[in-house]
Length: 497
Image (cartoon, rainbow, N blue to C red; front, side, top):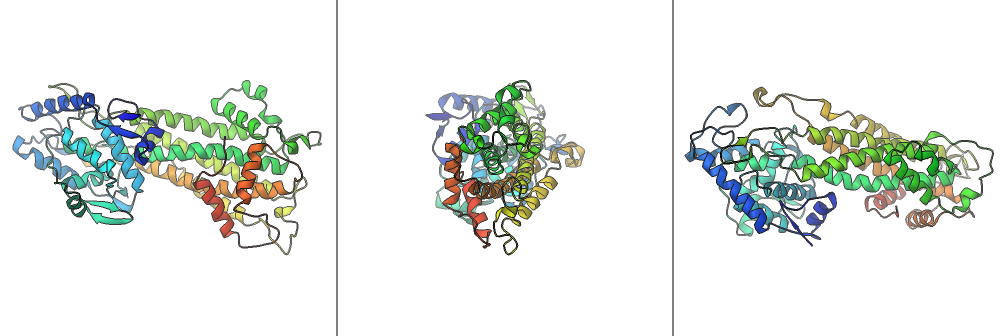
């Protein structure tokens, strides 16, 4: 299979496959014709006496200053150079690549007026892993991600920097090494390159893929904790959830039934006197399900965005280039804040389950150790989950609720979506650690339910844990155990389906 830029529809998995090189992507003759046709329209406007924003005028508050055809190239290059004002640590290399993939797809739809030559150079960067260095801070998420996109495309002009393995190298050096000449931008091209939401979008794509796995893993962790706690499986019955049929709730209840299927441990206490479990066990479908609903919503919006044109102005005909607001990050920014909250809540309820397992109830020893007093057992890792959960709560302030005017008031309402997207991924990173610790706790609790057996998938995950972390008999340094658990989560080693 080959993905056709500007023609086919991107998905999260397709973007990641193109980035990894497992899916070939190309610009076909159909896309080339659309790009060339739009370019002809821009050239006609650039040479006319009629002022058209960004084509023969200045930018932002300077939109009332008309630029001569002779000065057009300098105008576009100045735009990129002056907007490359990002600060902070560089983003991950994969994010730079995803940004370029999404930008090429948008440009190939034929509404941006950029020359094919420029798109082909970006494609060369993608296919040869020439990945520009992009700082993580500096975008307010309206007019698009101006600063990060400027850094992304500085190398087209021979400016900026590339990654060479893990070393930052000047673009001049890398271009010379690859026998590439600097490009001279023409009318509209600078704007087409740096107007857009590709920084927000790349972070969304990476976050969605991680969140998809962590949603499944949260169900696994919840099921393992329930088994260790010897909680009830009745709150997951289909009939209960059919009368409140939220999509996410139904899915989680179905998964919990699958994860607990034919569990000897569940059957062993079906006639016990306990009538209900705490919410963090009993309400797994409702809480995890609500987070799934947020995931579904964000995933739907991200798919629209990655197949949209988000630069400005949009060229519709030889006489019409509309200066609108397709670059505004608000549609994703608000949903990313929702996704951040949803991810944080998965950690919140996970920490509560870990706490239940160390309380010493229903046949479990306090702190999950039979030698308490001399040994602290699993007392302290829950401090770590508490700290991570609290940190996530502090990261849940919605960045999209803020706006600070820029560009002398011309850009008077901005989305702060770049901040939303970065916080979303920070929270997911913390969630990986929280779930890793819950899984470690759950495996220890399950030891005290032997010789009872569990479902096939739970037994498989128990073995995965025990291959890296042994049962805690007496106190030892747990840092290595926790790190091993976190690596299992990060590498997506657990069976979740």
